[in-house]
Amino acid sequence: VNAPPSLRLQPPRPAWGLRLPTRKSLTAGTGIRVLDPPQRVTLALAASGGPPLAPGVVTGQRVLRGEPIAGAGVPGTTRIHASIAGTVTAIDSRMVAGLAAPVPCVTIEGDGDDTPWPGYGPTADAEELPAARLRELVAMAGIIGLGGALFPTAGKLSGEAPAHTLLVNGAECEPYISCDDALLRERSDRVVDGARLLLAATGIRRAVIAIKSDMTAARIALYDALQAARDPRLDLALVTGRYPAGGERQLVELVVGCEVPAGGLPRDAGVVCQNVATTAAVADFLRRGQPLISRIVTVTGGAVAAPCNIEARLGTSVAALVAAAGGYTGAPRRLVMGGPMMGIALPDDELPMTAATNCVLAATALDLAGGTGGAELPCIRCGHCIEVCPARLLPQELLVAWRQDDLGALDHLGVAECIECGACDYACPSHIPLARRFVAAKARLQAGAAAAVEARLADERSAARTARLAREADARERELAAQLQPPGPPA
Ligand code: SF4
Ligand code: SF4
Figure 1 (cartoon, rainbow, N blue to C red):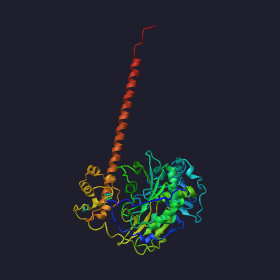
Figure 2: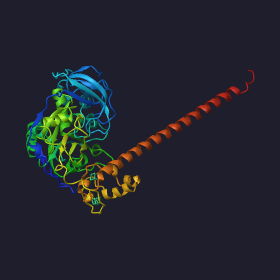
Figure 3: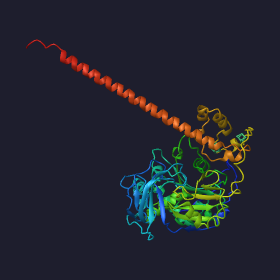
Figure 4: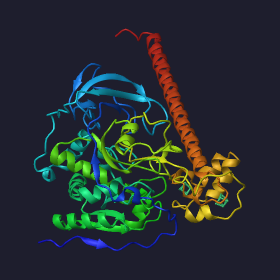
């Protein structure tokens, strides 16, 4: 019999970050409420952050629950699936929650019977399959990073750099959000099973599931699931509740003890990170043939009557999520997708949720109190922003460079490493919206870098064309010279 899983003690408290009021108690005690399929869903065809996929359906076509609607037939492409059974009523560009511009979408009007597509089923002996085949199946299942990044999971599992640790991230550090906590409390066995399948899909020999030390019920459930699995490759790590300990780079540092190089990915430090919900989604597909068509969303805030965690089909409207949580108690001061630190304000609740919608926060003024807000005052050079920055940047110096419009200095000071956590904003007594400026600076630098690459490629194309024309002219001259040669003496 293998030894039970080891429980790793809490790593040392980091010098960075904030201890925030978590406000998770609003939903932390509630179970997962599974929402009935809605009458209509709108599914973004660019849900994984890359260029949109071409739709594989046409208007008027009948689809079943779980049927691919984009990406099928292209090996290695992360598919998108119908989240309800019904009829495709529109294929057009629409706004979805969390994105700033319209994206191509497929809208399905439900027929009420929710018939499942018969094309998928459990994968027999999944752990015995070659790693490359497992990664193909993960792409087929349409699984993307449910921690919010939406990066295609299959892509993250393959890589040139060798990896020694699979880090399963359950350290949900943003206030209010408890969807991962709910998943761990109720479905820890799926997370543990998914971690084992991900080990098989990567060839990595060790997995660590990291949660916050104050997630008591989740810790008990997870420990039970780990004991039942009796797999010595799996460990449980408890990390600090400081914000943003759940950030990928911060978690690698806290749990694995190594730093992700600047400009690099966790893989460059030998670590593959996956969110707990993503990990469970892998088990859902390989064990039950269930592609990614739903996710758990925390619906919370002072303007919601009965905050709770809801499992909802992708493409459900935010309004339907709020209605399932008892509706509004009054007009929210702000409607946010995500938490109060890194969330994105929603213009209205008619937008459909996506796989990135981990939380809908209908916030009152009280929910938004503390941290950011108030009139912006001059920087007093107190250094609080530097103390809290998890990326070890100098926000105060970055601010100076931003005000001087000095992109070179912003680049030199490492603004690209900013994880946009907003901790500096929260700590700033002068209410300076630092993070927003750094996001803009990053976008300008990226645009500049893309333009520089395009200019270099244009130079290379131009040089190649000039060389080709010179070669052709040379060849023509040699041919002409050969034709003009006087004939030799008769033999
Ligand atoms: S926290 Fe605000 S006031 Fe203090 S140094 Fe940073 S930017 Fe300036
Ligand atoms: S938003 Fe950027 S600069 Fe500010 S604390 Fe977070 S990582 Fe540091």
